[in-house]
Every structure is written in C-alpha cells, then in structure tokens.
Length: 295
Image (cartoon, rainbow, N blue to C red):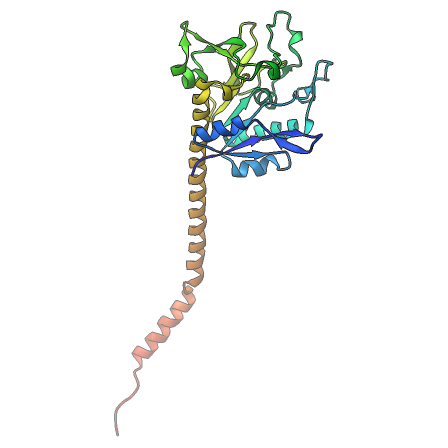
C-alpha cells in the first residue's frame, strides 16, 4: 500500500472552512503517496497513528509567543490553534521518526518547534533584499530571487541532477520565495542548508547525524518542476517509515501470540501431581491383576 501523507490544511475562521492549494495534493499523489487533509480537530497523536509522513504548508505568521517574544506591529495575522497543533505535531513526529516536509510557514514551524526563533519581519534586517512579494499579483511560479544550496546537504543530494553547479561548495538556484518572516536562530537537531544573497536562511534539514527525514524550504516547491525530486524523496522516506512501522507491528503481534499460546499450553498441560497419581493407579492395576482362577 502507498504511504499516507498527512497535510495540515488552512482554516478560514470567518467562513468556517478548511482549504489548501490543490497543487499540494497533486504533487504528493504524483510522487506516489496518498494525500489526506487534517485540521486541528484531531489531536497530533491521532494523526500520527495513521500517517506515514507530515506535510506542513503555507499560512499565517507563527505567533511570537511560541518562541518567547511579544508580537511586533509588523505581525500580519495568526492562527494560535494551528500553531499549537503543528508545533506539537512536529515534536511528536520527530520523536517517532515520522518524515516531515515543511513549505514556507511549514519550515518556520519546524524551526520553532525545535527551539528556534524567527525574524518577526524582515525590516529587522538592514540589508535584506525584497522577500515579501504580493503573491496574488505576480503568481506563485515566478522565481523572484536566488538561493545558494550547500553541496554537503541532503537537499543538494536530492536535487543535484536538476541543478546548475557554479562552485565547489554551493550551487545556485532561483526560487519562488514569498515571505516577510524568516528563520533567525536555528532549532536543535537541524541545520541551515540554503541561503539568499542577504544571508537569510532559505532551507533547513535534519543534522548530518540525525535519523529520519526532516526538510524545510522557504519557497513554494509545488510550482517548480525540478522540485518533483523533493516530493519523491519525501514520499520515499514515508514509504520506508511505513515498512518499518508495519514490521514492528508484525513482530509485536507475533510476540503476543506466542505469549498467549505459551500460557494456553501451560494451562492445558496436566500438573505433576495429577501425572503421578495416574502413574500410581496404573502401577497398582499392573501389579495386582484380578484373580481369574476357576474353582
């Protein structure tokens, strides 16, 4: 069976509806996964009981409360319920080894969940280039600025056949990155692997010695053809996780059955006292046969 990928949808509180860009669903399906959309009505534990991978997508600003700050006037809009849900989901997924892919806000959620912080607004950075493009005006597929990807990264290993190599340590790629917040201090167990020209972190991944698949990109990979490799790698990691999980479940079931069968055999077997009694009665019968002499 194909791996099940849980996508956390966006909530429109004013209309009481759940929504997301269908391109996310299409990319997961094309990569060989089964997409399933969840909202905050389910608990993180309930979601993780069913899925083999987690996709975190774009959305509102992460409330600064979750990285120990008060909100500045630059904060646009927030969804605290979704923040709490996704942050808890990431923490639990990392503990269980469930693969995670974060896109735009999703990358920022991963960072905050693992103890990192964010720039509440890029105006905090004096020499920052323009990142907060109006998506509705320019469209989601426009490559508005470049990023440098470390060649020592897992991200590079995934995308290398689609990239133009310009140096010995980094490769250059133009991306469709639209955001007004960014990763500031990197969380524990992850590392930055792509940067904009102004030094802003544009991609993160699990540390070199980390197990499992943890990846976050600040751009919108669902609209870039070379990023199909990223979805394929994510779904492949989810399939591997699923196989391991099913194998562990099989081993646990077999162990439980053996334990139950062992108890049943002990209960059905005659006790030593009963066996001795049967042996004694048998001996008496053998040693004292009935007298059949006729008179």
